[in-house]
Length: 292
Image (cartoon, rainbow, N blue to C red; front, side, top):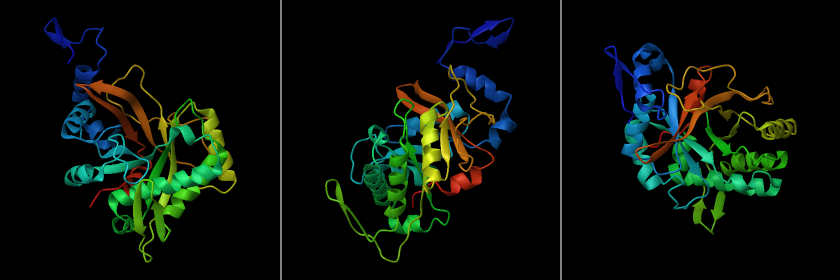
């Protein structure tokens, strides 16, 4: 925690303070009404936990409404990936929605065929985590965001394959990745609607141009989660600004959320902090998963 000094009887923070913790707490005092009007979330590459929630809530000034977690393939036991036996109960009891992130960053510049296989595997991971029956009851479908990092641009062909593979994963009668886990028979009377989306940096021009090319070729993209960071990290992370987009963002793709602070470490917990676009927040939240 940053050291607080006094001057003329008033509390102030030293100019050298960079951890943002007390500075954020002071900022919240003047923005109570504004704070209540914004939907915020966190994401992390670790199993969700009460300490992470406490830190995230303190930094945001309110409890996160959504929480991003990675999904690679069913049965993956790495703590980087979503672990349903632990995390389903954590999120369900607290009313926090899960934002699924499809993670295979080294593949996103490659072929349509590989994209299709990855999309199916990502869909299978989400199905295995939450159950087909539960997901089928989500009338607006489930948004899944393809993780594309700034220095590993996405190719149009990979996105075309990935988006189709993900959509097909909700329609197959059987999905079997025996190298990880046998999913068994997908109920024939169940249909799950997966909605492919992209996570990427606002200045990753090649990625957003590739997305436009893929869409022109018939691919589906139902939203973007864009990285547009406060630098250095500053709290609070609102308000939303019209600049939270990319100059190459396809006009048909709504920007649903913005990652405002990346890799922020506090008390040994590393979190990213996100802001939902007020223009789309109801639609956005309806397509994130609240575990049963």
